[in-house]
Amino acid sequence: MNVLRFSDLVQQGAVRGRRVFIRADLNVPQDDAGHITEDTRVRASVPAIRMALDAGAAVMVTSHLGRPTEGAFQPADSLAPVARRLGELLGREVPLVRDWTDGVDVAPGDVVLLENCRVNQGEKKNDPALARKMAALCDIFVNDAFGTAHRAEGTTYGIAEYAKVACAGPLLAAEIDAIGKALANPKRPLAAIVAGSKVSTKLTILRALSEKVDQLIVGGGIANTFLLAAGLPIGKSLAEPDLVDQAKAVIDAMAARGAAVPIPTDVVVAKTFGADAPATVKPVADVAADDLILDIGPETAARLAEQLKSAGTIVWNGPVGVFEFDAFSHGTETIARAIAASEAFSIAGGGDTLAAIAKYGIEREVSYISTGGGAFLEVLEGKTLPALEILEKRAAG
Image 1 (cartoon, rainbow, N blue to C red):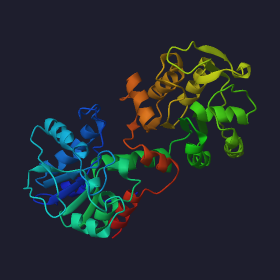
Image 2 (image 1 turned 30 degrees about the horizontal axis):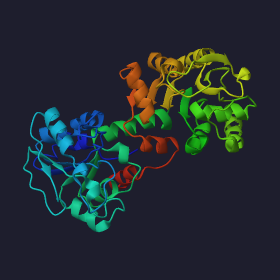
Image 3 (image 1 turned 45 degrees about the vertical axis):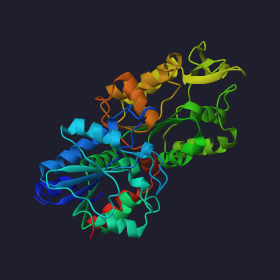
Image 4 (image 1 turned 135 degrees about the horizontal axis):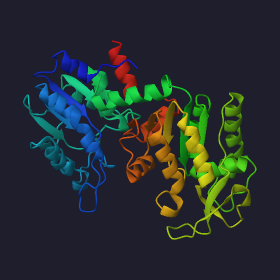
């Protein structure tokens, strides 16, 4: 993907004294008191900001937070907690600016945080008038928010269309490189792990991957639908019987390419859904009518882990069981540790996947951890992300 990179502009000395507008993804979870409970996205935004400050730019940063109503700012919508955390990470005060679309006062070497961009009227629908006003605030627009790259909004698309210069920040550039390495030109065999509660939410991803990958591992409720497609019992487990034909089509598409969708041979079941529910391992053929399948069994997990050893590239989206409950976490842990031990290039994305990675402490062993949930899924589907598309157009002149 050919886009202009902010790092290249810095190396060329084209940033000093310029007004730089960075669209970051600072949409962090908070508790009821407004305290940030997990700051990964704030920490991930720091390299682009430091890069701009060190290059002598006048730096403006903005992000969305939550789901505010346009034109009706509420205290709960404020980026104030983010400004405080960003200040701690940067070692300097980060002033928070409200009502900023008509002008921002910031000097070279300084940084300001512009209040929640989704409060601005016309942001979500990418109003051209708003986009032009925002573009007029800066000399260089930097998109460093992969998590919002699948949305054509004012601060992700419109401003890039009208700014004098539009480029990708270091975080967005790293995402582009990692996704390209995993999907555009992967080292084979290419294995994909796609798990979740429903086939319907991942059906287009499964179809797209069935045309690309050498091994497609399904887990969670998705796997139950594939078990039905293979004629195996699932008891009262979560599944979508009306999508059995679609699951069969994915299996057939893989088989036609000499590839496979491994079907579990053993599973971990319980009679009720809960952290304290007694867990029983049994062959999948022995699943009873009142059983709930909540994890893959040890035999299946070991077989999949062994297969992942030979992979050249691994794409991971979703835990294969109810890993939040310890009794049903062993399948996901086995897969996670196999990915960590593999010499393959591995890329992982999605909120539950990141939670599993954190739980098992394998952050350093996964080659690339994507910061985008919805954007990561749309890339797996083969979709073109609007925010990347406009950067490509601008780079092409």
